[in-house]
Image 1 (cartoon, one colour):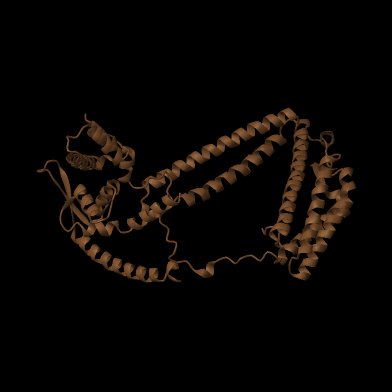
Image 2: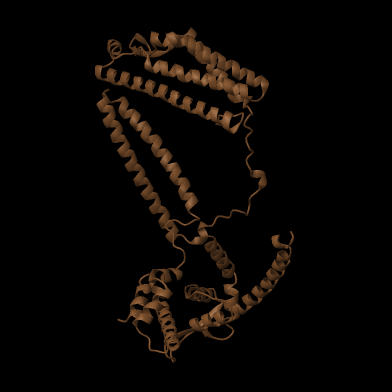
Length: 115
Length: 340
């Protein structure tokens, strides 16, 4: 039960950064599976059941653009960040830097460090 | 049809028609990419076992389809509180109507245990049927609202104009309401005067041309209990007068009030179990000129109303006493009875 709680809490923590991570890696075109491997290679493991619906949602929100490419071995949908997505990414990066600063300060004096 | 195709088709069944083709193509392409990679890693061509392993890892078709869909509610979290409130109101109204309907039917029926049992059973079944039907209709209405009314319309601006000054004052449990006490004293005094000095006005009057007939309603059995009724009512008036002077409730006043309620319950029980307290009977009404069938129905109804009233006094009084004791002893509050 404790392990399950930990897993779920860590999942919640990771969930908060998924959009930022995805937008940051779509400066160049990627299709779903290649993006999954790219994120995994950099240490962020994502379930395809999480990533693919997210890509569609970000596209519907105007943050990504997509195009089907049929000339390859199989049809693949390629995603790339849009102009709106770039603006969003810029704002998210600022917010991320602020959060990291705040959290590092809080964690420096948390229950394990003498508060 | 190969396994991947069947799997993708199964996912597609649970997707909206508009985006089904697109999503199916994407999933198919991803699965083929993953399969190719696995085969390369294994150093052998993909086979059925490898495909099954891959599909198992990818997840059940329904679960995969669900990840593409927004949360689907029959009645969503924004509408649910309103639905719940309306449901409670409707159920309350239906319950009241059922009790009234039962009372009227019982009052106009023959007085036998069998007829009572049959009527009660039938009334309960009709009541339950009505509740189920009302519940179903409400669910249908709210499900349609959830489905067809845009989400933005569900949103209620909760924070916009909220003003802390609008918070209702927390009622002081020991505070008295003077006007309520004065009215209670007045009506109790009126009742005492009526029962003790003018009992002859309590009854049924008939006028037929120049002839007027009066039939007293209350029997000697009732008037034998009158001293006890007088005692509890006079003590009740004394308590309320004391409260008006004191300005607030105290635990001894609460205990005294509960003792009076217990006395009221006991008196109601004795009136219910003892000789009939109604002086009316069908024969006297017929002598006064009322039609026989109407006389029977009228007497029956009045008796039932009296019985139900006394029963309600007993049950309500008993409940208030139990709650009062609980509040005084367990909650240690000096106000056991809810304000109206």
